[in-house]
Length: 120
Image 1 (cartoon, rainbow, N blue to C red):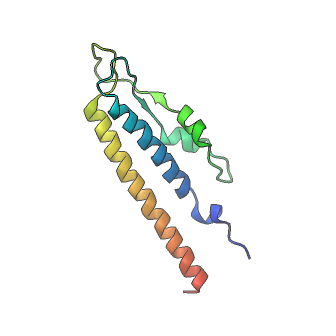
Image 2 (tube, one colour; image 1 turned 180 degrees about the vertical axis):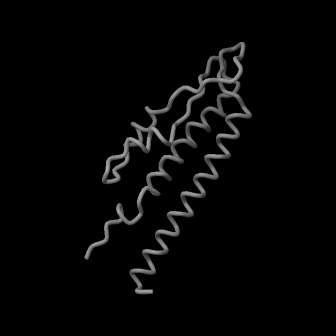
Image 3 (cartoon, rainbow, N blue to C red; image 1 turned 120 degrees about the vertical axis):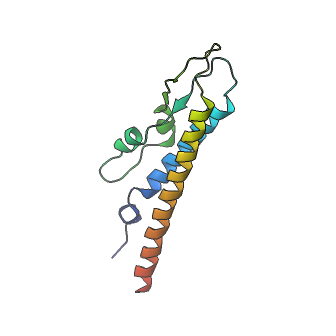
C-alpha cells in the first residue's frame, strides 16, 4: 500500500509555504519604511488557503504574491508611505510564531509517519 504524502501531511506544507511568502512581503514593507510613496502590502492566510483545491493542491507562489493586498494605514503620512513600523513589526513577529507552529505540526506528522513505517 502506497503512502500519499499529500494526504498524510495535510495542510502543513502549504501553511509553511504561505508563511515564507508572507515573510517576504512583510520584510519588503519593513525595508521600505522610509521610502516615500511606498504602499504596504500583506497576504491573507484565509484568502490564500481558501483557494486550495479539495485534494490539497496549493496555489502557485506567483499567484500567492498576486494575492497580496494593500494594507490600510491607521494613520496617514505626509510622504504617502503606508508602512507603520510598529504594526509591521508586530505582523512579522506573529508570522514568525505561526511559522514555528506550522513547522512543529509538520515535524510531529513526519515523526508519526516514521514511527508507523518502523512499526512502532
